[in-house]
Amino acid sequence: MVVLLVVVGIVAVVGIALASVGIVVKRLGPEPARQVFEGDEALTFVAAAMPDEVTAQLSYEDVRRILRLHLDFLHRQGVARSGGDLPEGDGPLVVEFGDGVDEVLARAAAARFHPQRDQVAAVISAQMAYFEAIGALAEVEGPDLSAGPSGLPLGGPEPANPAGPAAAYTDAAGPADGAA
Image (cartoon, rainbow, N blue to C red; front, side, top):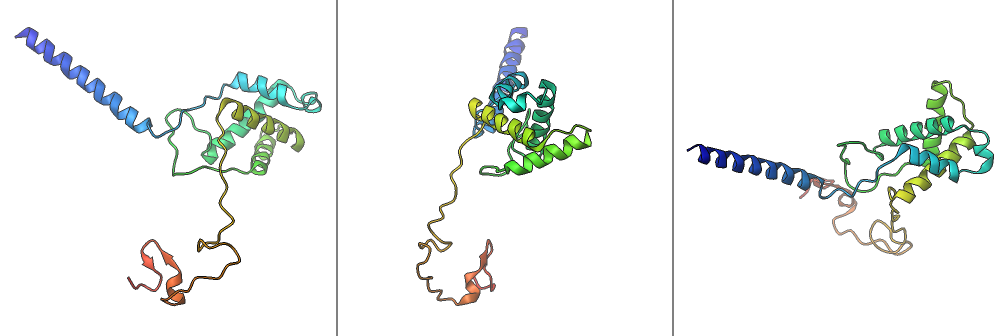
């Protein structure tokens, strides 16, 4: 009887473990492989990639602070993730380079740290090169601008709309005039 209870207990524990692993694998399956940001490695890479005139003006600690501020900005934008963060929505996230520079300058000033705009831009450019080197950036195809919203080549005739102009604008629910 005791042997039977031990066997049932072992089977139950193994079953629960396999189910738990299966759930996590299913949840992480569609997510791309994570690229890990190593702070010291990034600092070394960025310092080596920056122009000499900028490295002569910034200390390693200054570069580290700029990297951290920019990484915080990317995290707030949803581009950089940590731990169990899962992406929200489908498709690529796009962040403007200038927005990152402006945000870093603003946050740095709030912390009484005042790097120059060109210094911040050089550090962020080198950080982007680091992200590319570790495979954390993916090239994104831009939209096809050769066709208009109707699918016809730009400059071509507009398609006739047999339902009239009111039916031309629709939302997810159907035609704008309420007709189904």
